Length: 159
Image 1 (tube, rainbow, N blue to C red):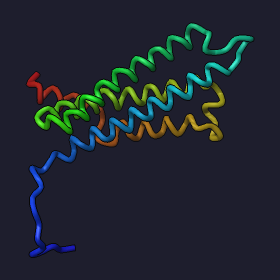
Image 2 (image 1 turned 90 degrees about the horizontal axis):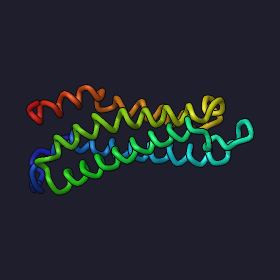
Image 3 (image 1 turned 180 degrees about the horizontal axis):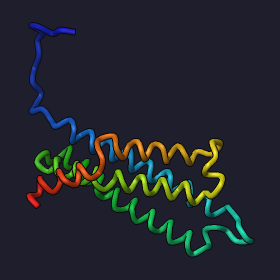
Image 4 (image 1 turned 135 degrees about the vertical axis):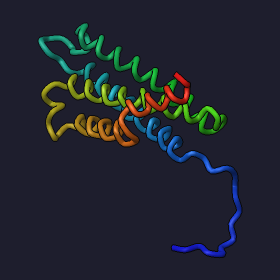
């Protein structure tokens, strides 16, 4: 399609679309993390193994706590990145790089542990755990692997 001679009006400076995409993807990854954690916490409260709810086992509690910690850190990073995209465009490149450097890997780790904590049922096609896992892995590398964003963040911070 050609728009030669079409009337137009500039609405403002062109934002860096790549940075905004990184922030939007990080927000989606945060949603994946939250849904996966909510699902496995609910499951841990009803699944009984060896006469006890699996959520009562120390190893499961520790894994859920680790997942929660990753979620909380990711939420802070995504909120900062979204704020920067809206209110402080000068901070957006660093915020977007930080979001993809941390949130992508954290999302995959939460989805992986979510799948593992379900045990055998999590590996079946009849269960939705594999959907979280696949989405998290695809999202992790969609905007490039985390190492690229770490390198970009280091360059932006002149480290």
